[in-house]
Amino acid sequence: MNSRARLGLCAGLLAVALTSGTIAFGGGRDTPDGGVPAVAPVGLTTGDLDTDVSALQRHLREQPRDFTGWATLGLAYVEQARTGGDPSRYPQAERALKRSLALEPGNDPALAGRAALAAARHDFPGALAHAERALAANPYNERALATRVDALVELGRYDEAAEAADTADARRPGIPVFTRYAYVHELRGDVRTAKRVLKQALASAHTPGDVAYVAGQLGQLAWNQGDHEEALRHFARALAADDTYLPALEGRARAQAAAGQRDEAVRGMEAVVARSPLPGPLVVLGELYEADGDRERAGEQYALVDAWTALARANGVNVDLDTALAAADHGDARTALGAARAEWDRRRTVHTADALAWALHVNGRDEEALPYARRATATGYRNAVFLYHRGMIELGAGEERDAREHLSAALRLNPGFSPLGAHEARAALKDLEADA
Image (cartoon, rainbow, N blue to C red; front, side):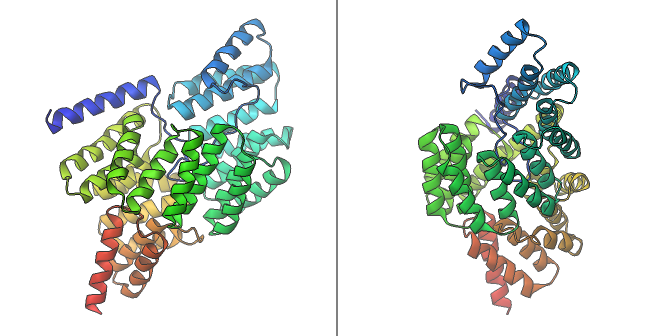
C-alpha cells in the first residue's frame, strides 16, 4: 500500500473512531497530558461508566422527578465524553442538568455539573461562574471546588488558582483536590510540594484507576525534571494497576526514548497511536521516525495530526492550541501563528504564551516573540521545551548570551525532552561555542 493510500485509510479510521466515540479529546487543560481527572459522579457504583449510565437511565424512567439522579446522569454524560471522546454526550448532559434544575432550582449538584460541562467545552469563564454558583449553595461540593481550580488555571489566573486549591484542600481533601493542588504548585516551580502531595495522594489511592492516575502523574512530574529512571518506575506502577492506561503507556514511551531505548519507545508509541491517535503521541512518533531517518513515515504521522484537528473542529472541539504546536514544527507556519493568536485571545496561560512565541519564531518574528517566551517562563514552571523555545528565540533575536543560558538550562533539566528539539538545542549550543 502506498503512502497516499495508507494516509487515506488512517484518516478514515480516525473518522470512524471519532463518530463512534473512541478518541479521547482530553479535558482541554493547559497541560500536554490532559491534566487532572474529573471528580467521579456521586452515585455511580459499579466502576463501569456505561453500566452505571444504563442503570441511571432505567431508574429515571421509573423516578422521573429525582433531581439528584438527573444531575448525576448529566455528570456521567460529561465523564463519558471526557473519557470516550464522544461530543454528542454534551447536549445530553446539558438536557439532563437542565431537567435537574427545573425540578429543584439552584441545587448544587446540577450547578456543579454545569460547571464541569462548560469546562469540558472549553468555556472556562462559564465554568468558573457555574462553580461559584454551586459553591454559594454548598461550599463543600467537591466537583465545584475542583472545577473552580481548573477554570482559574485554564484562564491563567494562577495566584487565584493557588488560593482556590488551598480552599479546596481545607474543605475536601482527597485525590481530586490533591492532584490539582500539586499541579498548581508545579506551575509555580514548587516541584518539591507537588511531589509530596502526589505521594500523599498515591498513599490514599485504593482503586486501580486512582492508583494508575496518580502514579502516572508522578511519572510525568519526574519526566519533566529529567529523571527518566524514576519516571519509568512510576509509569510501571501505573501500568501494574491498569495495563491499558494510555497516559502511562505514552509517558513510558517518551521516557524510554529519552533513556536511549529507541526501539521500545517506537513500539510503545505505535501502540498508543493505534488506540488513540491524538496530536501529542502522533507528533512524538513522527519525530522518533524522523530521528531515525524515516521521513516518509514521519510525514504520515504529521499529516494525521491535520486529519485529527479537522475532524475534531468539525465536531465542535477547540483545537487551536494543538494546531499551533503541531503546525509550528511540522506544518504551515502561517497556520500555526493564526491558531496561536486565536488561543492567546481566549486565554493567557504559560502554554498559550509559549505556543504564540514559538509560532512567531517560525515565522521569523523573533523580536516580537521574545515577550511571550519570557512570559511562558515567568512563573518558575520547570519545562524544558519552554526553555528551549526561549533560547532559540533569543538566538534568532541576536541575544546570544541569553540563548546560551536557556538552551543549556533546557538540556540540564531534561536532556531528552524531544527527539528532535534536544538535538537542535545541542547543535545551536555547539555553533554558539564555535563563534565565541
